[in-house]
Length: 571
Image (cartoon, rainbow, N blue to C red; front, side):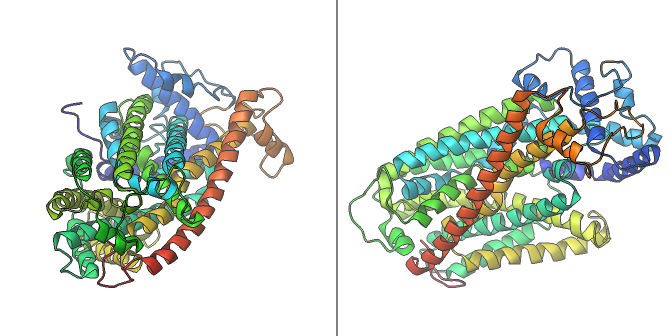
């Protein structure tokens, strides 16, 4: 993987800003020809064309497991077109203007990232090992291990579903560029609006969490001589300055380096913890427990809401699916994403289990929410804190940039008809948004100054949805709509709709929910309803997690030295 740069989803958005206007024109052209807006049949047909042309243009590539998964649920939509014909590639640009064709070709040229680059970004985006020991503290050896195995397996399955939806819906003519695009094509425009705001909330709370982590490191470096809320303000100011940079084209190598910094901190802290007693002072400040012998439990006996908060920290640890569609969109071979994701997930799971069990075995009930801060020697704390500050700056900058661009594109440009991001007037709007964004993060972080409880709330409210609920729910909705097309007339590109009924008719709902009598596949129906069941279970777990995290936040204020907007630190 040497010499391979990680794909940068934010950079992708910047590079493609010039082509997005052309794509809106493309949609209008298609609507004029067909006298309607694009529907699922259009997305499915052109995605089939895209995968066929990708396969034809890369004959040396050997089929893998992803190719076999792609075949699942094919052949349901009736099509009056030879997908293997030599005109498949030309059909993507048929009826488009010369300018639009040029923009489509520009989009194709952007897809250059390899599977190794995708592995780097998946790992960088997901890996957050320093809460793993705390999750074992809250749940014990047995539940903690089982939960990391189960939630990791489900996160891998749901990440695979996002990839599957991507290859089923993406094409040069109708490209998938973000999570919101998949949302709109499976659940409609109103759901897209909700998901877009959830992504924004997710990013701004992540900024608050990273600011808290950095503030704790700075507070320890200063021997507690600096007010904790001032420590948070320092990193809010740093974030405001950092995010004045609107482009992150030169930032991707920093994102790649974050993984190596985290791994370095892991190995250093494992060595330090093995030769240092727990940080009793910080444990007392966090949990109000006195110094004493280390106690480790197979099954934790903490209150139920605290164990739920530990589960949500595990959910938070596997979060990262929000930008998966953007990673795939930049890959030269989207079918290879599963290989990159599989290796990344295996590495992340191994790190979580090894590091979490190791630290908890040495520190037991004294394990802190940010594990490397649990050593008692100041010099060893300093090493971990310095490296943490570096990785936190990288993470905060990425979260801030992504969140701000989501807000700018969807609110300032789309709803308020504001100036383009890269224009002169856009610079002033951007700067004002940066200040408002980071200081909102300050209010959240200073109001809830416990990293572990805030991470649990984020895991329940947003990560649970993007990683588990939405992929399974959108897969169910996609299959319902796809099954409903089974008895429609044969689809022809640029033709009129051949639907035999509408969603106002019971017959279409019956076909969508249970499949057509003519083409019903029992495996497909089981798969569809299994995803619905998992989606409902994930939503119920999220509700329970929000409730448990809320109680944990309230309890943390009673047991922790930290208070809202106060000088006392939680460690």
